[in-house]
Image 1 (cartoon, helix red, strand yellow):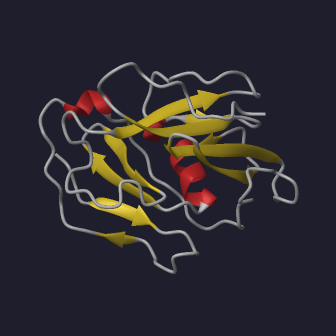
Image 2: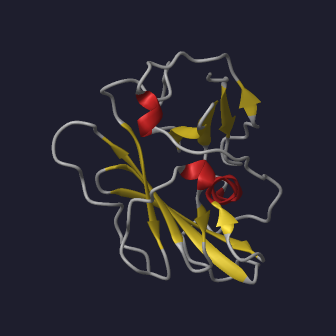
Length: 178
């Protein structure tokens, strides 16, 4: 059963986390979504360029978002643990984020206001947020778990690309993590 989406807004928009009405989800979309978990929100500002210079924390991880072909948004987040849960990385990056919780976990519905509006988080046959992981600057891979079950290791990168379910799959976000 799905609960209403949660949205974290970046400080640049001046909006705060809000819960909205429950969304309907077509049966069978569970395969396109993710595992379970919760995001933290109290953190120092993330680097907006993806550079980790000046970002506090013993370890760092990057978020690379490709909302459209050729557009790339990158952030760096510092942390002190052995790894950072992907949802915590997303929250600490301070990128606008819309998620929805399901019985199997959390699905990413919207990132950096893409899509601008939606009535279903994972509508059948429509564009969705594809998830990628890179560890220690290696190439992107598609993780075998969803965003709420994924932990990004120190030096790792979490990639999200707004993708179409039809046609040839696009390559992972660009640039490849440094």
